[in-house]
Image 1 (cartoon, rainbow, N blue to C red):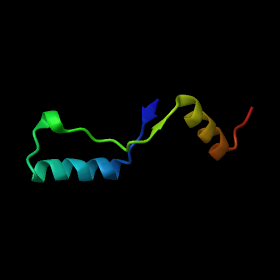
Image 2 (cartoon, helix red, strand yellow):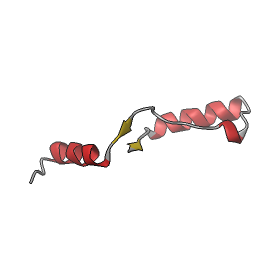
Image 3 (cartoon, rainbow, N blue to C red):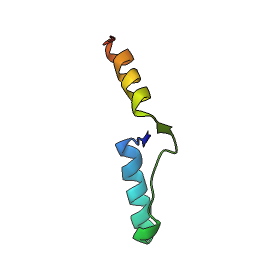
Length: 52
């Protein structure tokens, strides 16, 4: 399982943490949506048109 995050969302989270002086040990950013590697590979195959 993996969790992916858009870089813009990560940048917003970093700015928020810096502006609100959050301690680094409380810093946890994620999308909250896990995807299996198999599902990710299938999505990539579908989007690129590369099927077995």
